[in-house]
Image (cartoon, rainbow, N blue to C red; front, side):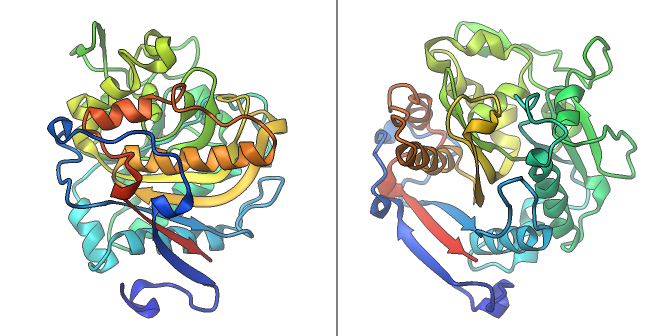
Amino acid sequence: MKSENENGFNSSRRKFIQKTSAAALGLSVLGSIPSTLRGAVFNNPSKKSKVVLVRNSKVIDLNGLVNNSILSEMLQAGLTNFSGDKSFSSYISGLFSPSDIIGLKINTLGLAGIAGSALTSHFTSVTSSLINIFNESGLKDSNFIIWDRSDDELISAGYSIQKEKDKTRIMSCAGKRGEDIGIGYSDEEYPVGNISTKISRFITDLCTVFINIPVLKDHGNAGFTGALKNHYGSINNPREFHNNNCTNPGIPEVNLLSPIRTKQKLIVGDLMMGVFNGGPRWDRKYIWPYGGIIVGTDPVAVDTIMLSIINEKRKSENINPLSEYVTRHINLSAQLGLGTNNLDEIDLVKIDL
């Protein structure tokens, strides 16, 4: 690991960095991955999937107000640590080029109950802080498109629709309710088990690469929604994939679709606020300020760690944990080769600022 100065950490703020195997956290093992099933994403069984979890107790308060300076420091620390031996600028230049159009796939579902309040402020804070960091590495605002399923949901998270190409665009697949002004979905239909789907044109046509920005929530059908389930917002018919706890077919098969699998270059999870019960709706009774950011490229590993955070909170609230059966899309995704949920294969780095 590089020195603090080389990595860009503020030594006066950093309390400690603890690097550990995820197994040391006492997380439940959701299943191993047969080597014959490892896919194109997680195709190096000898290399652990690195996940960086950054926290700061002062980054967000109970009302949802974000300290953007601390948030930027957290993002910088997480991304820099995840880059490993490379300098941060060389790592970013290896992921993205000045000619790339980089999608930021966020998750703004279920915000009606808190829309317009400070509890949604972390959405815009995370994306703007992330873009500012990339600006410092030579990328422009015009390189980015922030997107999700509908204009209404984006607006509920505090965004304003913006379509000018010389700025960061903020757009949706379906547009505004009752109006057909969204970017839409692919002409091509993609098989997902015995069902077919169309993929957002942000992925197939507009964006050359994208960053997955999930949030921390439980979910009534899937048990948990993280990086993997975020792609139900990337297809035109997610309701058709909610049977069997969103499996068979469902979340694993959607994430296996080539445009989604190959264009997703990074996961930066917004763990500022979390929903530990009653999700996917944001219910004030079940929202808590976790004050975290998670960084990785393996969606299964990222979701394994995020699920453990939800279950730890549920335990503290005397609520039963989300079971391995209900959240089995994570294990099934591992079996399809989308990543690892084997705790011995996850290299978790915890940073407390």
